[in-house]
Image 1 (spheres, each protein chain N blue to C red):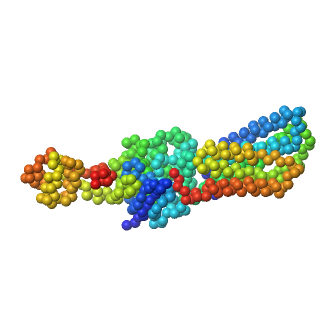
Image 2 (image 1 turned 180 degrees about the vertical axis):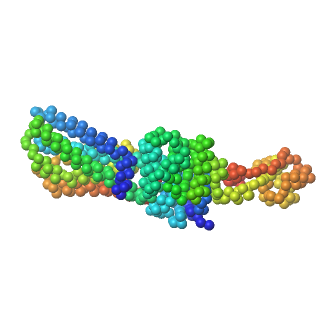
Image 3 (image 1 turned 30 degrees about the vertical axis):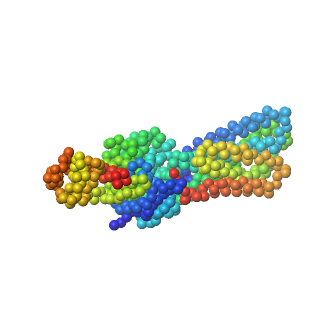
Length: 229
Length: 306
């Protein structure tokens, strides 16, 4: 399986996508930061605004997952290279699962990593620019991350829903649009720290993850029996 | 006789419409099997079913004495193919494509990549992405990819499409070499008769989704070596004479004024004399050698003439 993952990464020039995603992430959070910064005198920026910016990087990486799904799965169907892949002595399920693992793992990793980086940058900026009312401590941030890390994982799950829509027509455009819609609807969890309990986090995360798994199951369920046209 | 591939009453329908039906193909180990048929006859569909890309609606396929199922992946280590047109990861170079192929096939003799590229005569392609290749180059690269691992069964769907005449001869020689020296069984399809005629040991003729004939080239050469063609204004009378007086049964009326006699042991002269005796005027009488083309046309057109 590791070998398959390695070969998949070799095929698609993976690093280019990662660089693109990181760049998009910084541009996006930069914009949000400046809007916070510009409004600092008119509106009171609270700590939840701070985490809003941190969490918004999830949106970027849900779309990033959509791009990876298109590149790794939908385009293989579109370019018919999948009919080459499926004549190899490897189970079709294994091939698809190795692709999905790349998508889930890298989405999870990049959501988490980018949130940590953005939080660190915002924290440092706030120390010198003071655009957030009230004090933010490192403890608050680590606490927040500890509570929401499972959320990052479930978002990686729900990002797979775009696979389901993309596979219907084997269309790259549908996949990307689906992932943008998912990103906009689910991407930001603007939770107030005080009134969110861990259990409600868990329930929502679980539901998201289950939706992702079901969507994936329906996209690839018959893959061994299906004709490859 | 050892068979490497057999199909039993194989059929495929798309949306209730039969595309191929009751195909019973028998490919012997070590032979070159030519699948011949006009466009749309179902050649590619049959090949895709052998490769498990399309799932048969009816019947079964037996490869290397095992019945092909959805999960018989191990069998694919032993065969390779080009279907329709060769498909590559276009953004990668030729070497990367072949290297990936070896990895996926579980084949680790990487120096064979170079050997294969030399065999198909592809040069100066080191840092070129496949998307910049011409169709002929892609075709050669596709053949190179299919032969790197020296599979036992090689399936080639119209492999000489897009090649120049020199290239066609090169590939034909290459296939014959692979067949003779490595004992690779080759299933090759084409709508170009001359191609198949020159290399195939057995041909299967497909038309409208049916395998109308499966016959060895040797027996075609034997059976269709010669015929006598008579052109006349009055075919009916000629038929009467050769049937009743000369007792020839193996003949065919092509149209209103052409008759072909396939029976051996009767010389042109004898027939001519007999016709003269009966006062039948003929425009011409000739002895001809049938090529596969005539044979093929007689099979394909058989439906219309019957």
